[in-house]
Length: 366
Image 1 (spheres, helix red, strand yellow):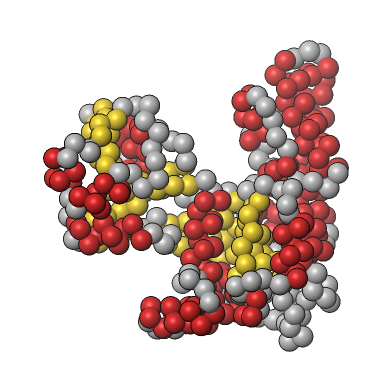
Image 2 (image 1 turned 120 degrees about the vertical axis):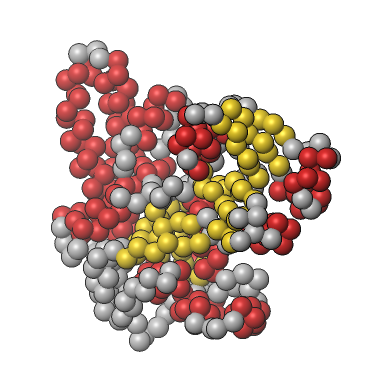
């Protein structure tokens, strides 16, 4: 399952520095606007201690963690919706992503130029929000014009679509993003999802701070937190420059020691990767055997046949049943044989909703 989170923000807020921490695909990081022009794509592994614990019990040939793609997109400037700067390319790159990681500069440093001359994360956020909202308004107005006559003539489907578009348009004109609009009926929710609006994508705001603010945040972070309290969005505090220094250390022990000195239990990079995975509404089920212990990615709420299809389409087509072991039971009892003997291997059918961390074995016939 190939899903992408796009890292966005104004020029020089730390997007590429953060991307470099996340990925071995190194993006250029320099102190001038539009340093990143073509989007850089990195495949990031999702930290999961469960895989390591299972490997200790199973002794597999390899461990295969889940992954998510992170895209470093060129910096946006005011007027992007009208093609200013690299606007059209930037907006096109965002449209291709499944979720947005919005980086905001929340640190003072005279040596790092700000494209607008001063540090103000709320202003920066509003610039990008406005450009995306303007583009969404253009899309909605075009669609409304196309179906207006059908809706006025009494076409039931057209009336529902028009109503959904009207709700989005009202919110956007009020300076709100499409993700703030909710719908009651499943039909409306389906229509809303089919619009693929830029501001409907799930978003995680990343406050890029200095080292001294990595644990507790600062006044800029407080401003952002206050600003997004009515949005369905997450917030993460990361010192990208410090994270880049941690990433360059050779050993795991040295990296952990650095984190301890900062008063952090886990690196910001690990927290970001996990948050990105969650942002995309993803979970993992696990297969465990002598060849490999592997995490397989699926969308939260999927049933057993859909998850079987993640491994191979034939598994879904010929699905018979799923044999499920809970991770906690496997770890407690130590082996699949012990789990079977204890009666804790569950046989589930087509309606079983897979849970994060389930250890699965699928039976199928093609």
